[in-house]
Image (tube, rainbow, N blue to C red):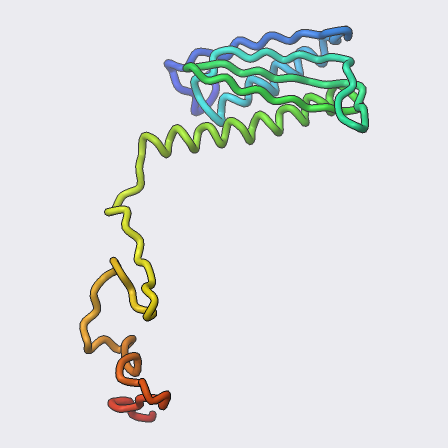
Length: 162
């Protein structure tokens, strides 16, 4: 058993395919091992399909593409990477899948754990004061000199030099 693994967690089913391309066993095992590691970003992904193809993609026309399709709990994550070699295409697709899984997890966790507080942010009004923020009493040290300076001169009453 893997250290830190959940006892109830079902291992991800990984299928490696090749379209117009023969996938060697070493690449098949590497793809299965690396794709299985994606479960650390979002638990509950049940199935992964890794598909290599010789179809050129993009203006540079990288000869090999790798598509990773993950399914689980009603979510589908698809990432496509291209490269000169199948291993490079796999790494590019894995990087994209990691980013998408991280974003999906952030979205799901954000729904289940909304931010605490009243949700109101202080807003500046046209006179420069706070609206909807905390009320300050007239004796706050931060407010010294803020009121009564209509003449443009600095109001230095109550401030002593050190």
